[in-house]
Image (cartoon, rainbow, N blue to C red; front, side, top):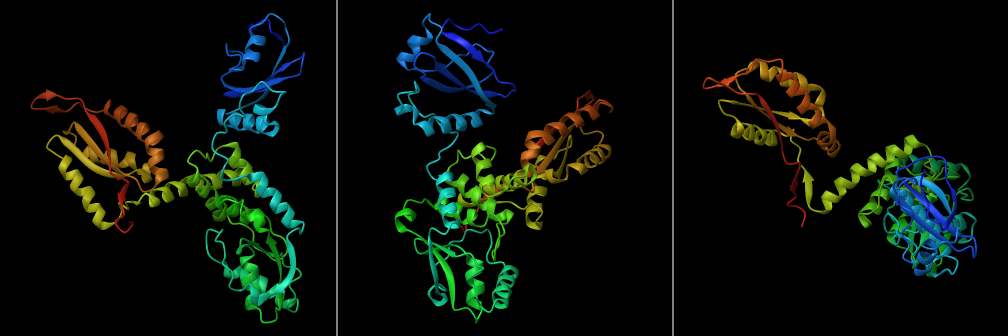
Length: 421
């Protein structure tokens, strides 16, 4: 049982567990609070980390005036975000009811994207606050268009919307208003295109975000607003694809390297777009992680080497030749075909039983395969092949027995793209 100092009158635990927890101290004499987080268990020796002189004096005192309560369990990053949310909501660092001298630090910067602000704007748009009525279609045909989707227009969706409008005699009442932010089309690209291709259309519903609001938005917030507008199918519109949402997550990561695809904030982004099932969330996060690596390397002027190309295979062959000698067996393999590695290994070793030294030149077909190789597959293969040696006759070099060894040498996965300046 953990021993508490005299100042703690009562401890209120919480059922559950996690690698970190969020806690709260309350002074029963004046109801002032201190909120904090800790990586560890409530039962360890940690109590709090406040540097507030007033709180320090109370904690070191003899009067039992503090209630210590566990509020939440989770990962450390989740607790960082939860702590920041609680303290920011009450502006604890400037609040006379709190001992905290800061509002905590989120697991990554929130400056570029304010999710709640975007949700508020989207809710107001849906309620019609920014509607300016129907406007002549010709006034909007050439408006600049924000590219929020991962691909260009979906012609099938355009044809469907066009057909629905034509069936209604060119009336666009059932279309959501196209949404304009700072003179640019933020939402309604498919609707506007379909309406402009329909000769029966005269006007179209329009909503315009006031410039005084638009000028406060970051690029990430404008992008997120475009996704919020398409978070579900309703009326004549096209909802977000997985690639659209992946694109938004990648944009956030590129803008802020501290953005974590597995964080509570990323989950909040997905839930805001009505991606609620764990399966869909995990699928999108996996795609985003892969796409981020690709995009980051592209921006850095690097491209993944395709080792399956004939010209690149010759480089691997030359590499093997350089490493090969009378006592060394060398061959190449792909980390993308781990199911074939056992067979390839046994075949090569059985054909070269007198060679004690084995080198496998590994090339990676993708970031996922490379990550899996370095994390699990490579060590697993090494141990498996070493176990195989135990059942083989020990070879000799110049009459001296030599234990077999195996080494994996990895080819570079990226090269500089000279076309990128």
